[in-house]
Each structure stands twice: as structure tokens, then as C-alpha cells.
Length: 418
Image 1: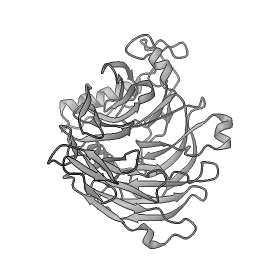
Image 2: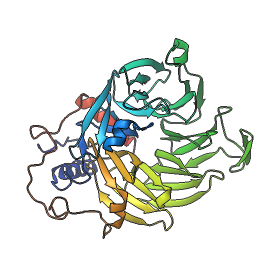
Image 3: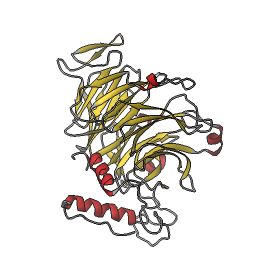
Image 4: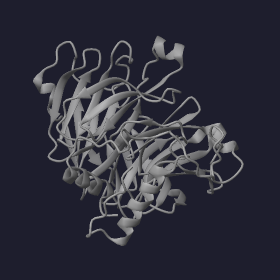
């Protein structure tokens, strides 16, 4: 692997980041940790592809994810397999990096075909039929990058958030007879002062939460499309308590990078280094977890009373919800951890370093020591040894289809004024 080039205009902090990433990419132990699947492109999001179990997956005990990639594609990938990555299908048609992806619930499985939505840097959302690998339709209405897509269960609508500060409600068309009008905006939600990073919806489907780069989270009444105001507000016939005479909003010091709704709590992550748990009914902060650097992704696991936290430097922190202590650390990726999913006792993490890693939750928690560094195939976690294992082709890092300027712009957008 060639040493990275350092531009003369880079700050000392930026140069240190480049050097640390290079060190991690060269570390033979880290090349094996987490049974990596490598894509050769920056990964911006992964989602569970197994919305409905298929006979093939049950038989072979595979776990499949759809990955949104910076090379303008989305790909179906088998993760956690001994043989490494296996690309099953590829969705190709966007003219910019694919920044978000969602499987339409109850639309089928990976064997029979399913409906998948992809949002892109090209400002569009595409609806795909993965059986025919064709585009059913294209949603156009955003004037800037699409950053997040959320499809509620048992709904004929879905929602998208964009760098244009808007959330748009869209209709899912009849696949047998789609109409052009099906792909027009149904409703537009406006209120954020800067771009929207992520959106999530309450378990009862009544409230949409939007996390913005303006450091705030808003709550929207989906029955009216309005922000929730006042001390008590009626939403779908139910009273919700909020702060008196204030917008229903949660605030960080800077960009809110992720938001997850789980069992009556709203979990938020920010580049201000904090992960916060908020009571969904009162907007009161219940927990506050401070990390050493900016947070890009979170994955609460209430059944184990823990939360996985993905940091910008590629580290995973695991926090105990009850004690508020960081109980485990994993030096996992060489770059920012953008997305995480869980299934069957395992957590899968995806990074801008192009890899998806697999973690057995029980093994990680039982490991004796704060930093998780198990022995891998006879390799001691604290000893640097030579290995024939490589993570690149021809000794060089695989590059994406973006130009150098586009790649730098994407990185700057992801950093977004740290």
C-alpha cells in the first residue's frame, strides 16, 4: 500500500487523521478482526435485506444486507461468511453516491424479489424491483442530496430527508399499475435551518423525528404535518407532554448525525461527542454518554441494556444503559462508522473504509478486558506480525468511481463542519 499524500493546506489535525487511517489499514491484525467483507467503496448505509425470511437464507444461515455505496450503486452483500464478501445483486442507475437505502416492508424477500428504495447525491430517490433489477419509478422533489429514507410498517407512504432542509412524504405506487402521479411529493415538511441527516418514526407511527445538521431534532405530527408545539399536544387522539411554549425539539451542540426510536426512548448521536437518551413523551434527557470524538451511528439493544456507538475514527464504544459506563471498546475500522444493524445476536458495522465487520455480542461482552482484542488464528492482538493477507488488489487501495474532487467533497459533507 502506498503512503497517503498529504496536501499542503491540510491542518495538523487532518494530517494526524490521515496517518492514523493509514496505520490502521496496514495493521495485519485489524485486517482480520471482525471477519471483514470489503467492498472497495465507501459505505454510507447498510440495512437488513431479510425483511421476509427466504428458504435459502434459513437453510444456509446467511445474513444479507443492502449496502449504499459511494460508487453510485447499492449492492446485496452476504456478511459474516467464512469466504468473505459475496455480491448477489447490484442496483445501478444513480449519477452520484447512494447515500441512503430502505427495503419496503412486506414486499418480498431476496429470493423472490423485493422492493428497495435508494436515495442519492443526485437528489433523486429510485424505487427498484429486485426480481427484474429494474427501476419502477423515480421520485424527484428534493433540491439537494437525499440523506435519509424511512418506510413505516404497514404504510402506503414513506419519508425522505435531504440537505435541502426538507422532509418529503411520498406514496408507494401500485407495482402492477404505477402512475406518474405516484412519484410526486405528497407533502413537504419544513422547519430545519440546515440540512437533515436522519429521520425516524415512533413505534405507533404517529410522530416523525428529524435530526438536523442545525444541532436539533424536531418532532412532526404525521396526521397534520405540523411541528408539535405547546405543553400538551393532541396527536391522533392522544395527548403528548412537551416543554411549555417551545417547539418540540431536542438540542445538541452541533450536527445530530443519527437518531433511533426504541421502547419509549429517543436516542440521538452527535458530532459533539455525545449520545443522549430522551424520554419520548416529555422530551426530558434521561442519559448522556460522552465519547472521545464525534459520533456517526448508534445501535441501542434494549434487551441487553447496551448501546453500540460508532465513532468517526472507526472505534466502537459499547455503553451500559443502566450504569452509564462505557464497558467495551473495539478498535474496529480505519474510518468513520456510518451504519450498524443487528440480527441473531450479532452486530454488523459498516464504514467509510469500505468494510462491513461482524461482532458476536456475547463474545464481545464476555471478553476479559476493556478493549476487545481476541486472538485471531494464532495471531496475538498486541503483536504485529507479517501476513500474506491483503485488503487491496495489486497492493493498492481500491478506489471508487468518484473523481478526487468528488471524493473530497463527499468527505467534507460527511464531516459537515465538525
